[in-house]
Length: 59
Image (cartoon, rainbow, N blue to C red):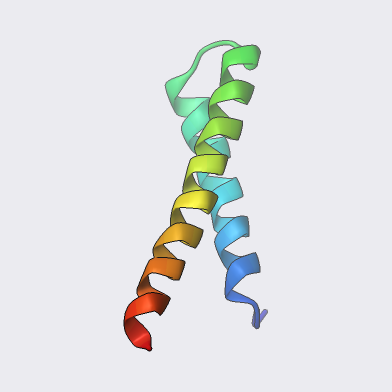
């Protein structure tokens, strides 16, 4: 399967990583959910900001 969207690939990767890390690092379901959501937001927003930062230097 070839994905043409780098953004979709990044979000899909972040989803899987967040699920695995939440299952490994937290014990109860409520804290796993909170941890997964916060980690997902950090990963996606951080990579978007870093991509925007790299774009500034490509001009």
